[in-house]
Image 1: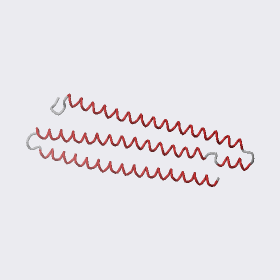
Image 2 (image 1 turned 90 degrees about the vertical axis):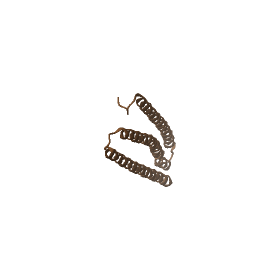
Image 3 (image 1 turned 180 degrees about the vertical axis):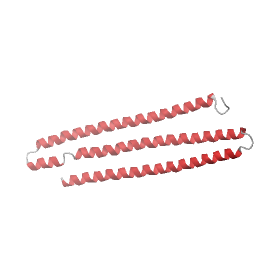
Image 4 (image 1 turned 90 degrees about the horizontal axis):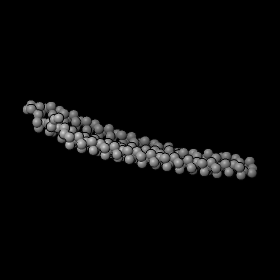
Length: 183
């Protein structure tokens, strides 16, 4: 074993990884529970709407009443589907943000550990190797900068995707409203 790797550092790393796994697993379970509850609620609402629609069809006494009931038959299911998609997307987005936050924290810790190990190695390195360590530090700084830029681009892409989903669900809601007014 060398001076840079000890049983204590291994134990600390293992403990940190266990904590991270625990946070990720807990987050995934919370999101899964919310998705299950959302699906059950949506299924219940669609079922109840279907019962009400069937009753309206059976209660129709004139062709006009039947036509009116048929015109609104699918509307509640479409509304429920749009709401389900929007809510499921929001739950997934929350999970993605939480995982990204945890990952960013791990990357920061990794960068600190690498920098610390590099400093330790530089202190005990033979004379004349300063250039090698300067090059390694330069590469690490470039990697860190590239990661920051990629992270920012990913955040911007997530914001754009969220805007597109919002626009699509708003458009679907508008179509539903227009269909209600036409019926």
